[in-house]
Image (tube, rainbow, N blue to C red; front, side, top):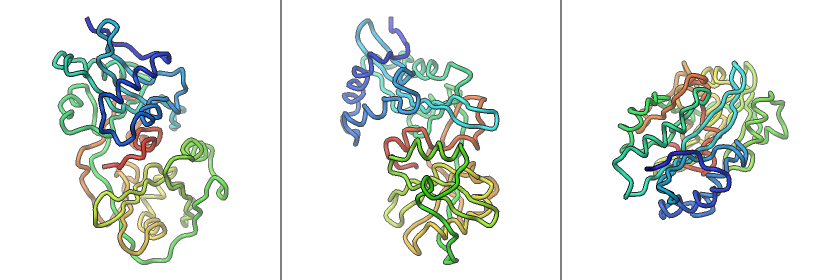
Length: 282
Protein backbone atom coordinates (compact mmCIF):
# COMPACT_ATOMS: atom_id res chain seq x y z
CA UNK A 1 0.00 0.00 0.00
CA UNK A 2 1.29 3.44 -0.96
CA UNK A 3 1.12 6.12 1.73
CA UNK A 4 0.41 9.72 0.66
CA UNK A 5 1.51 12.39 3.15
CA UNK A 6 3.20 15.77 3.53
CA UNK A 7 6.98 15.65 3.62
CA UNK A 8 8.69 16.59 6.87
CA UNK A 9 11.61 19.06 7.04
CA UNK A 10 13.89 16.12 7.83
CA UNK A 11 12.97 14.56 4.47
CA UNK A 12 13.79 17.68 2.44
CA UNK A 13 17.16 16.46 1.14
CA UNK A 14 15.70 13.11 0.08
CA UNK A 15 12.84 14.86 -1.73
CA UNK A 16 15.30 17.22 -3.46
CA UNK A 17 17.45 14.28 -4.59
CA UNK A 18 14.36 12.43 -5.87
CA UNK A 19 13.31 15.39 -8.01
CA UNK A 20 16.83 15.98 -9.30
CA UNK A 21 16.95 12.36 -10.42
CA UNK A 22 13.46 12.53 -11.93
CA UNK A 23 14.26 15.61 -14.05
CA UNK A 24 17.90 15.24 -15.18
CA UNK A 25 17.40 17.80 -17.98
CA UNK A 26 16.03 20.55 -15.74
CA UNK A 27 18.04 23.68 -16.46
CA UNK A 28 18.56 24.51 -12.77
CA UNK A 29 20.34 21.35 -11.55
CA UNK A 30 20.55 20.08 -7.98
CA UNK A 31 20.96 23.55 -6.46
CA UNK A 32 17.78 24.62 -8.22
CA UNK A 33 15.75 21.86 -6.58
CA UNK A 34 17.09 23.00 -3.23
CA UNK A 35 15.90 26.52 -4.03
CA UNK A 36 12.52 25.39 -5.35
CA UNK A 37 11.74 23.17 -2.36
CA UNK A 38 13.12 25.46 0.37
CA UNK A 39 9.65 26.94 1.01
CA UNK A 40 11.22 30.39 0.79
CA UNK A 41 8.08 32.30 1.75
CA UNK A 42 6.40 29.68 3.94
CA UNK A 43 9.29 28.98 6.27
CA UNK A 44 11.61 25.97 6.68
CA UNK A 45 9.15 24.16 8.96
CA UNK A 46 6.17 24.61 6.62
CA UNK A 47 4.66 22.25 4.07
CA UNK A 48 6.83 22.13 0.94
CA UNK A 49 5.86 18.85 -0.77
CA UNK A 50 3.37 16.00 -0.80
CA UNK A 51 5.03 12.62 -1.05
CA UNK A 52 4.09 9.04 -1.94
CA UNK A 53 5.88 6.22 -0.12
CA UNK A 54 5.83 2.52 -0.93
CA UNK A 55 7.12 1.26 2.39
CA UNK A 56 10.40 3.12 2.93
CA UNK A 57 10.78 3.97 -0.77
CA UNK A 58 9.88 7.44 -2.09
CA UNK A 59 7.92 6.91 -5.32
CA UNK A 60 6.21 10.27 -5.96
CA UNK A 61 6.49 13.98 -5.13
CA UNK A 62 4.37 17.08 -5.62
CA UNK A 63 6.36 20.26 -4.88
CA UNK A 64 4.75 23.41 -3.44
CA UNK A 65 5.53 27.02 -2.50
CA UNK A 66 3.42 28.49 0.29
CA UNK A 67 2.88 32.11 1.30
CA UNK A 68 0.37 34.54 2.78
CA UNK A 69 -1.18 36.91 0.23
CA UNK A 70 -2.87 40.22 0.94
CA UNK A 71 -6.51 40.61 -0.10
CA UNK A 72 -9.31 43.01 0.89
CA UNK A 73 -10.49 40.25 3.24
CA UNK A 74 -7.13 40.10 4.97
CA UNK A 75 -4.19 37.69 4.53
CA UNK A 76 -5.03 34.48 2.66
CA UNK A 77 -3.05 31.27 2.40
CA UNK A 78 -1.67 30.73 -1.09
CA UNK A 79 -0.05 27.58 -2.50
CA UNK A 80 1.64 27.45 -5.87
CA UNK A 81 2.00 23.86 -7.09
CA UNK A 82 5.31 23.19 -8.80
CA UNK A 83 6.87 20.16 -10.47
CA UNK A 84 5.53 16.70 -9.71
CA UNK A 85 6.67 13.21 -10.59
CA UNK A 86 5.66 9.58 -10.01
CA UNK A 87 8.04 6.71 -10.73
CA UNK A 88 7.12 4.70 -13.82
CA UNK A 89 6.74 1.60 -11.66
CA UNK A 90 3.89 3.27 -9.76
CA UNK A 91 1.95 4.98 -12.52
CA UNK A 92 -1.57 4.08 -13.57
CA UNK A 93 -2.95 3.76 -10.04
CA UNK A 94 -3.93 7.39 -9.51
CA UNK A 95 -0.98 8.54 -7.39
CA UNK A 96 -0.63 11.86 -9.24
CA UNK A 97 -4.26 12.67 -8.54
CA UNK A 98 -3.89 11.70 -4.89
CA UNK A 99 -0.82 13.92 -4.51
CA UNK A 100 -2.77 16.87 -5.90
CA UNK A 101 -5.83 16.19 -3.77
CA UNK A 102 -3.84 16.24 -0.55
CA UNK A 103 -1.96 19.38 -1.60
CA UNK A 104 -5.30 21.17 -2.05
CA UNK A 105 -7.36 19.52 0.69
CA UNK A 106 -7.41 22.53 3.04
CA UNK A 107 -10.36 24.80 2.05
CA UNK A 108 -8.50 27.80 3.47
CA UNK A 109 -5.81 27.49 0.82
CA UNK A 110 -5.99 28.88 -2.71
CA UNK A 111 -3.85 26.68 -4.98
CA UNK A 112 -2.52 27.52 -8.43
CA UNK A 113 -1.14 25.56 -11.34
CA UNK A 114 0.50 28.22 -13.51
CA UNK A 115 2.61 25.98 -15.74
CA UNK A 116 0.49 22.97 -16.58
CA UNK A 117 1.73 20.63 -19.28
CA UNK A 118 -0.75 19.99 -22.09
CA UNK A 119 -0.68 16.31 -21.29
CA UNK A 120 -1.91 16.97 -17.75
CA UNK A 121 -5.00 19.00 -18.70
CA UNK A 122 -7.41 16.09 -18.27
CA UNK A 123 -6.07 15.51 -14.77
CA UNK A 124 -6.25 19.24 -13.99
CA UNK A 125 -9.92 19.25 -14.99
CA UNK A 126 -10.67 16.07 -13.05
CA UNK A 127 -9.08 17.52 -9.90
CA UNK A 128 -11.44 20.50 -10.07
CA UNK A 129 -9.16 23.30 -11.14
CA UNK A 130 -10.82 26.33 -12.73
CA UNK A 131 -9.33 28.53 -15.44
CA UNK A 132 -7.59 31.49 -13.85
CA UNK A 133 -6.85 33.21 -17.14
CA UNK A 134 -6.67 32.27 -20.81
CA UNK A 135 -5.83 35.65 -22.41
CA UNK A 136 -3.13 38.27 -22.21
CA UNK A 137 -3.21 41.93 -23.21
CA UNK A 138 -0.35 43.28 -25.31
CA UNK A 139 0.89 46.80 -26.04
CA UNK A 140 3.70 48.11 -28.24
CA UNK A 141 5.51 51.42 -27.98
CA UNK A 142 3.48 54.19 -29.60
CA UNK A 143 6.15 56.87 -29.36
CA UNK A 144 4.51 59.14 -26.77
CA UNK A 145 6.48 60.80 -23.99
CA UNK A 146 7.25 58.54 -21.01
CA UNK A 147 5.71 59.10 -17.61
CA UNK A 148 7.82 59.94 -14.58
CA UNK A 149 9.03 56.75 -12.92
CA UNK A 150 11.68 55.10 -10.75
CA UNK A 151 13.40 51.76 -11.25
CA UNK A 152 14.46 51.71 -7.57
CA UNK A 153 11.08 51.91 -5.84
CA UNK A 154 12.24 50.46 -2.52
CA UNK A 155 14.73 53.31 -2.23
CA UNK A 156 13.01 56.15 -4.06
CA UNK A 157 9.21 55.69 -3.91
CA UNK A 158 6.58 55.98 -1.21
CA UNK A 159 4.98 52.56 -1.21
CA UNK A 160 1.94 51.21 0.58
CA UNK A 161 2.66 48.38 3.00
CA UNK A 162 1.48 45.62 0.65
CA UNK A 163 3.55 46.75 -2.33
CA UNK A 164 6.58 47.29 -0.11
CA UNK A 165 6.37 43.76 1.30
CA UNK A 166 5.97 42.16 -2.11
CA UNK A 167 8.97 44.05 -3.49
CA UNK A 168 11.12 43.19 -0.46
CA UNK A 169 10.15 39.52 -0.67
CA UNK A 170 11.39 39.37 -4.28
CA UNK A 171 14.17 41.97 -4.29
CA UNK A 172 17.00 39.49 -5.02
CA UNK A 173 15.28 37.78 -7.96
CA UNK A 174 15.73 38.53 -11.67
CA UNK A 175 12.77 40.90 -11.87
CA UNK A 176 12.34 44.57 -12.80
CA UNK A 177 10.60 46.64 -10.12
CA UNK A 178 9.17 50.02 -11.05
CA UNK A 179 6.79 52.71 -9.82
CA UNK A 180 5.23 54.89 -12.51
CA UNK A 181 3.45 58.18 -11.83
CA UNK A 182 0.17 58.24 -13.75
CA UNK A 183 -2.15 61.28 -13.82
CA UNK A 184 -4.26 59.53 -11.16
CA UNK A 185 -1.47 58.36 -8.90
CA UNK A 186 1.44 55.89 -8.77
CA UNK A 187 1.26 52.31 -9.98
CA UNK A 188 3.65 49.67 -8.68
CA UNK A 189 4.73 46.98 -11.13
CA UNK A 190 7.05 44.00 -11.19
CA UNK A 191 8.12 42.75 -14.61
CA UNK A 192 9.73 39.60 -15.94
CA UNK A 193 11.67 40.43 -19.11
CA UNK A 194 12.27 37.48 -21.40
CA UNK A 195 13.03 36.68 -25.06
CA UNK A 196 10.16 34.28 -25.71
CA UNK A 197 10.18 34.58 -29.50
CA UNK A 198 12.80 35.72 -31.99
CA UNK A 199 10.90 38.81 -33.09
CA UNK A 200 10.73 40.69 -29.78
CA UNK A 201 11.41 40.75 -26.05
CA UNK A 202 8.39 40.51 -23.74
CA UNK A 203 8.08 42.78 -20.71
CA UNK A 204 5.59 40.68 -18.72
CA UNK A 205 3.71 42.01 -15.69
CA UNK A 206 3.96 39.50 -12.85
CA UNK A 207 2.64 41.91 -10.19
CA UNK A 208 0.58 45.10 -10.21
CA UNK A 209 -0.36 46.94 -7.07
CA UNK A 210 -3.03 49.16 -8.65
CA UNK A 211 -4.78 47.19 -11.41
CA UNK A 212 -7.27 50.00 -12.13
CA UNK A 213 -4.45 52.38 -13.02
CA UNK A 214 -2.74 49.79 -15.20
CA UNK A 215 -6.01 49.24 -17.07
CA UNK A 216 -6.53 53.00 -17.47
CA UNK A 217 -3.01 53.92 -18.53
CA UNK A 218 -1.72 50.73 -20.11
CA UNK A 219 -0.56 52.41 -23.31
CA UNK A 220 1.27 55.22 -21.49
CA UNK A 221 2.88 52.72 -19.13
CA UNK A 222 4.03 50.63 -22.08
CA UNK A 223 5.52 53.74 -23.70
CA UNK A 224 7.36 54.47 -20.47
CA UNK A 225 8.91 51.03 -20.15
CA UNK A 226 9.51 49.82 -23.70
CA UNK A 227 12.31 50.63 -26.13
CA UNK A 228 11.10 52.02 -29.49
CA UNK A 229 11.36 48.67 -31.26
CA UNK A 230 11.76 44.97 -30.59
CA UNK A 231 9.67 44.69 -27.43
CA UNK A 232 6.09 44.32 -26.18
CA UNK A 233 4.40 44.99 -22.84
CA UNK A 234 2.15 42.14 -21.71
CA UNK A 235 -0.19 41.35 -18.81
CA UNK A 236 -2.68 38.58 -18.08
CA UNK A 237 -6.16 40.00 -18.69
CA UNK A 238 -7.42 39.48 -15.12
CA UNK A 239 -4.71 41.87 -13.84
CA UNK A 240 -5.87 44.79 -15.98
CA UNK A 241 -9.62 44.23 -16.31
CA UNK A 242 -11.26 46.58 -18.81
CA UNK A 243 -8.02 47.75 -20.43
CA UNK A 244 -7.93 48.60 -24.12
CA UNK A 245 -4.78 46.99 -25.48
CA UNK A 246 -3.17 46.88 -28.91
CA UNK A 247 -3.84 43.15 -29.07
CA UNK A 248 -5.41 40.31 -27.12
CA UNK A 249 -3.64 36.96 -27.32
CA UNK A 250 -4.70 33.50 -26.21
CA UNK A 251 -2.47 31.90 -23.58
CA UNK A 252 -1.44 28.58 -25.08
CA UNK A 253 -2.09 26.61 -21.88
CA UNK A 254 -4.35 28.52 -19.46
CA UNK A 255 -3.40 29.28 -15.88
CA UNK A 256 -5.47 27.36 -13.32
CA UNK A 257 -6.52 27.79 -9.71
CA UNK A 258 -8.62 26.07 -7.08
CA UNK A 259 -10.17 27.57 -3.97
CA UNK A 260 -12.67 30.19 -2.88
CA UNK A 261 -10.64 32.44 -0.60
CA UNK A 262 -8.99 34.52 -3.34
CA UNK A 263 -10.52 36.04 -6.46
CA UNK A 264 -8.80 35.54 -9.84
CA UNK A 265 -7.88 39.24 -10.00
CA UNK A 266 -6.04 38.86 -6.68
CA UNK A 267 -3.83 36.02 -7.94
CA UNK A 268 -0.70 37.20 -9.73
CA UNK A 269 2.61 35.43 -10.39
CA UNK A 270 4.53 36.40 -7.28
CA UNK A 271 5.42 33.84 -4.60
CA UNK A 272 5.51 31.16 -7.30
CA UNK A 273 7.95 28.94 -9.17
CA UNK A 274 7.69 31.37 -12.10
CA UNK A 275 9.61 34.13 -10.35
CA UNK A 276 11.64 31.91 -8.02
CA UNK A 277 13.15 29.89 -10.87
CA UNK A 278 13.24 32.74 -13.42
CA UNK A 279 10.95 30.87 -15.79
CA UNK A 280 9.41 32.14 -19.00
CA UNK A 281 5.70 32.71 -18.52
CA UNK A 282 3.80 31.29 -21.49
